[in-house]
Amino acid sequence: MWSTTTLVWDALVSAATGDLDHLQQLVSATPPLRSCQYDYTSPLQLAVRSGHGEIVDWLVEQGALDPDARTHPFLDPLVTYAEDRGELAIAERLRAALKEPGRAHAWGDTGAIQRGRSDEARALETLIDRGAHDEVRTLLNAHPALAKDPDAYWGEGLLSVPANNGDHDMLALLMSYGATVPLESKWGARYYFKHTATAAWLLERGMSPEHRNWRQFRLLHDVAFTGEVDKAALLLQWGAQIDAIDDDYASTPLGYAAHWGREDMVAFLLERGANPNAAGAPWATPLAWAQRKGHGAIVERLRGAEAG
Picture (cartoon, helix red, strand yellow):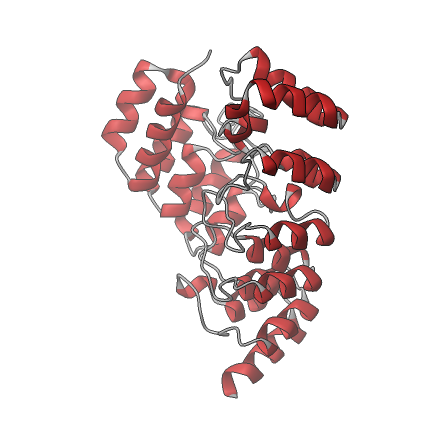
């Protein structure tokens, strides 16, 4: 059963903001909204994130709890997601529900999006996939507006696939017709920052070092999480905010590096002036992450930075 993107977003916002009455109205009219997703994020996850226990309980009663649900891209179970935020009562109720027969349901990925695409738009993506430069040029000469199509490649941007392929000639061709890297995409680091040389090429041609997803998770957060110091250095060279805080984990890039035990990245970011105390919540400081995840060497390094 399909629902509109507007309804999905409405359900997600209701869960995140604690509007149980409106969420109940939405689910009553369109039951699949109880387990809807956008970018692998469900109403239940957002209710957990915001500490709305009443909504969590109601969604679990509606069958929204998936035992295999994981946050993305970090693959934390919802119980861990709650515990990390200090929502221990919610974590315990989720843990109990998972043990009860019939309370949890394996929904899988319910976030498939059907986008209305013209024949020409689909043809352009096929030609780009094939690396057919001459045919791409011919099609764009006939339909130049396609170069600025906001829905290209699932909304990731027309340049996403050639960037992923490291095809600078295709990138240059598309950009000559007005294609740009959007400020926001769901998986930007997997496309635009897959290859360091391509990332540098794009930054030189106008890509924002503050590229982020809808959770305000920036490229610097992503490369801090993966431990890619060379890419972090590139982003800082182009002016990325070293202490930017995302919405989902309320953390700076240093916090992500501490969370995932990236000692070299922690050392690099501290050397470049990262604030060891910056966070959007007390549970999300770099030191709190390192302590909770058991990264002793990083704990000592952060304590040294705080003392300094």
